[in-house]
Image 1 (spheres, rainbow, N blue to C red):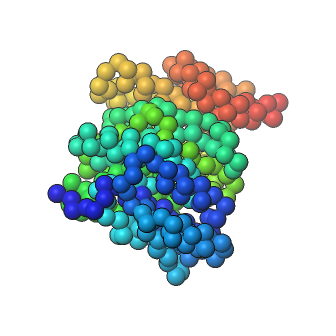
Image 2: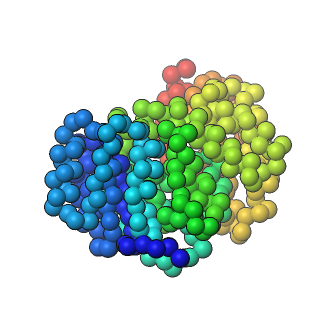
Image 3: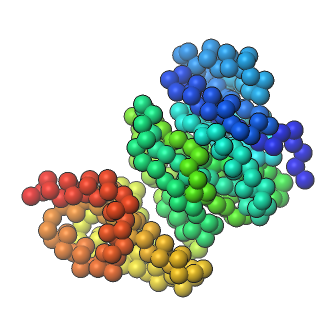
Length: 352
């Protein structure tokens, strides 16, 4: 049994985040679930952030504020924060994001009602620097779907994570300090080895994307780390030969290869091989349809966006010839992600 003083520890780490951190803090203090501790780690901020945090801590006894004398970076600051947490569950929030009022209650209730689950994420709005909603994701995912996605991406953004502080064996979950970025993907992947996981379809978090965000400024490092973690997850569920066949796709997925006729042929063949392996193991027809749609979206993102677009008529014809099985699902994926489709169309147009 876990010895805890509160049901939930909310963990926020911040470095020079005075532009948005007040919004993040206020969104947690306004939660409908009232029994929680709010662990805030100031990672050696040098601007107005410390004074702002001090003011919140003086006014709110649920806040436990810690200050690091030297900047440690997000991963190490998170691990320091986890060491201070006492709750049964950990809820993550970043300094530039916002939680909707019933977020903690909904995720707490889910894990209480599903004791075989070690973690749950949730749907989210993507907002810009002004708080305007740019896009939304509200698709619920179960463990089977999350394991499939885990070959390429985490199932949801980091500030939607809500998980057990302790693993089933009693050890404490920690981030791997090897990763400066994608530390959330690595943590979720390791948690998923310990028990079931899920993503709620309910939108409970507003996830901010702006020019200073780590996932924008360090995109290529993020992509390389995601590939490393994703390949480990693929290796855990696919035969070695199938993993090798996915290399051309993965090369475009992490921005290291541009789309070309040979790469297109091999990437599509690799996805076809993965589907031949995965579809018979899908729990039901709905999961099979979902897998086809996800595979089509994966091809579209890797070949059209990350791989640089289909730059010529020859490339386009190669793609259409090789990927004809995926075209209905690609049309669906384009409808779900029109910005990627438009970006790719513009790349093609510039060549003519």
